[in-house]
Amino acid sequence: MSSTLSFRGFARLSCSNLPRCRKSTLQSILRLSQPIIKTRTPTFQSFPWRNLSTTRLLHSERLPSERRPVEKPTIRENIYTIPNLLTVSRILACPVLGWAILHDDFYLATGLLVYAGLSDAADGYLARRFNMRSVVGTILDPAADKTLMTTLTVTLAVKGLLPIWLAGVIIGRDVLLSLSAFWIRYTSLPPPKTFTRYWDFSIPSAEVNPTLISKINTALQLVLMAATTVTPILPSDISLSLPALQWTVAATTVASGLSYVFSKNAVRIVSQTRKQPPPM
Image 1 (cartoon, helix red, strand yellow):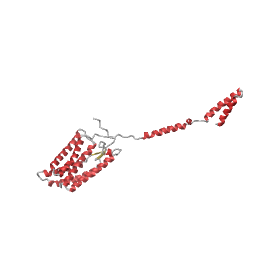
Image 2 (cartoon, one colour):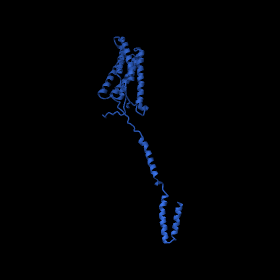
Image 3 (cartoon, one colour):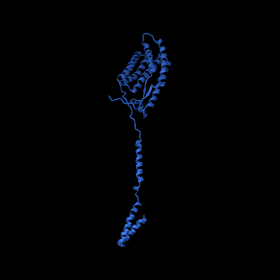
Image 4 (cartoon, helix red, strand yellow):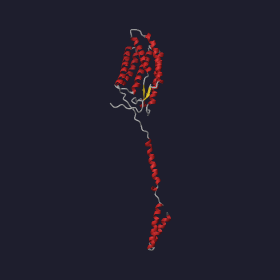
């Protein structure tokens, strides 16, 4: 590079003193040397690998956004329906029912039992007739029945109207089913699994379908608890017929608990691709 530049400077200085023919010859030599000088001083932009590296860099910057997972919309449903409100009212009536039995107010207790039976039949009819079924309803309805049964079992056992061993069988089964329900709710809840979303029952996760033996057991338990509750206010004594019914309830209670363990249709995980009902 330095030798070439010095040659050009020497040629320019010599051109003014040489004859015209020699001057033209030296200018031709200078013109020929110019491309050589340009090719020997390449710029950084002339290299092709710069554009290639820039393309790779831009492509790598786009990769995180392209690989970002697509978030699925959360399924929600309307839980503020008349059947669900009737079910919640049965749950709220249970503390009053327990207080009435402990204070020997069996007339009030009998009236609350009649209300519980009528509301249970009404919410089931409304849910089927007007298409008000909901996943939370399939959980609240058996929860209300179990709350009612637990209240009656504990208070009647405390008053000595129900055998302690039978109360242990009924309560033990309900406790195990309740713990299983909490676990199923956690495992079936769509991500993210947070405390707020866990208790947000408008987000369905699992649907509970009572088995046939469970329905029979619930009906027999209601008959037993109602008969035991109204016994103190009846004019005739029916306590002699209660032991046979108590053993029958104990057998169906154990069988219904096992049916939830071995039945494949008792619990159904709600699919995330379930179609939403059309807006009313």
